[in-house]
Amino acid sequence: MGNGLIMTLDEFEALPQKQQLSCLYQNQVKTMDYIKGYKLYYKITTIIGSFLVAGMGILFSFHLG
Image (cartoon, rainbow, N blue to C red):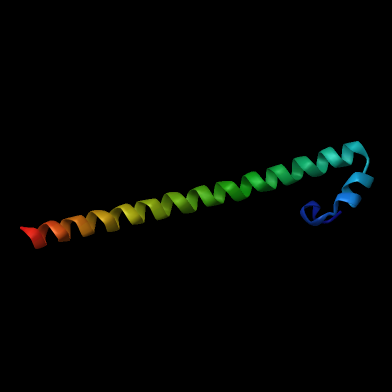
């Protein structure tokens, strides 16, 4: 059982219950780690995007003024 994410349903059902629960827990922990990485990525892109939008607003106000 190297990677439970690519395990078929039949392989999963053939495991004893403790191994099934362990596999589900490990997959959940791995999923949470991936989500944390995406949250950081979205925070960074939000900051960069807000600076770009603010800069466009300033340039547009200069154009109108």
